[in-house]
Length: 301
Image 1 (cartoon, rainbow, N blue to C red):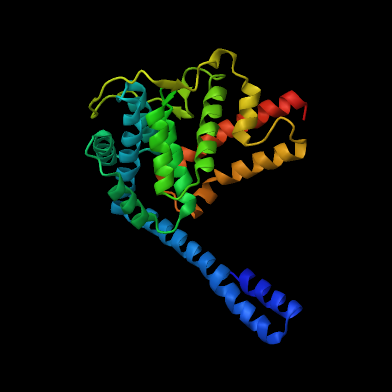
Image 2: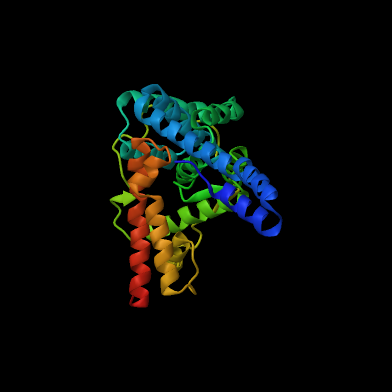
């Protein structure tokens, strides 16, 4: 279905403030400035979704890019540690990657952490795959953030690399900072649960298989968990929902509903995510629901 908002508003503004001729001109401008770009975005998303669901090679190319970027970000810690590899494998488990896809993912991770990694070419390849599907980018960045924070530490270089990815992909720095904070809040909430799960994903068995280590430790680490023992889990719940403690009950409900819709399988599919990535992000909805339940309990909602 086409978009007509630009043409309608352009026509009405031209008609109200000028005359029928300017109304027609306004309608034309509305088409080129608003409707046409919106239709292009919808077409790109539809094209991406069709490719994701029908082209296995396309899917594998996305796996390669996703895990190479994860390796690149994790290398910012100064060395690849067991927690980085554990998280990468947990993500593979949740995505239910085939063995062939896992081989590609491990190889890509190792490629990404190497000093010779060409970040620019990977970003170009990603843009070729997803076209103008900007909605897809946030989901991809969340994966890279999970890997970076898997050891509960975000070094300056890891943070720089995450921000670099955001910049390459056209994501404002404040949006990227918000995604990082949401992940941190999610991890605090998950500390309430049993040690059988972490990051919303069930743990795999062989974490180090297929990976290699490189680099040396970095002493200049900025821990996001310096005061984990006394962390305010209720505040983390508010942060995960993206609202303040002063928000009204209705604002809390709206924030919860908005995030649950964002991670609903049908919504994820409509934005071009693969079935593997849909499995990954439907898990996040569990933590969002837990945050909402915690807030409801504290407010007697």
